[in-house]
Image (cartoon, rainbow, N blue to C red; front, side, top):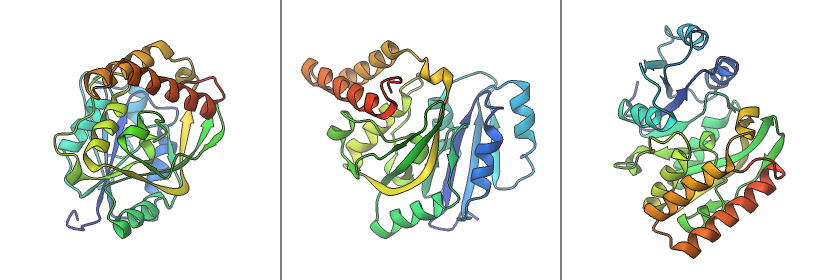
Length: 252
């Protein structure tokens, strides 16, 4: 099954997502592109969430790993990457939704152009409804000023992520990963179609802006090696773009 050169591993970290999980899984199962395997890493969820996941155990396309201790989304994604082998990897969060032709459109876009890192337009729904149109391509320098690559829109070549990992921090783990990957592949390219629906939840709207600032500042300083002025302008531009994206009510 995994011999197909365009096979995709879908990685889904899950924690207490019982309210939205069925919708997310339904959107994956209904994909028009069929050469995929879904790997779910359950991050020590509650019983209600576990009972939902157990309904999918018999589906041969789905593999579930159960963590005994909560580790965070970054750890879960790294764990899933180690447990999979397909040439392409797509990520989705446990409360987001894909359009039915998401995988088909994106894998065709990647293979036709020989791209290593792609993302798509997306819509927000839930607490905020908006269309998000990121730039048609990012390099590292443009990304640290405008972080509008949603993780659930990403598809990447596995061959490009050797020694590249998500951090085990509870927040901003995907920002670090994207920075490292962009430094390696030089550019990420956007498929200009709305193929993903990104859920904005009430709890994410209330997340600590100061905490997010701290972690992005720290990643920029310690890993991206930005000086004080560069780091300041990175955070300034990220804030401005986030305000435009979420009408000033949600940063990052």
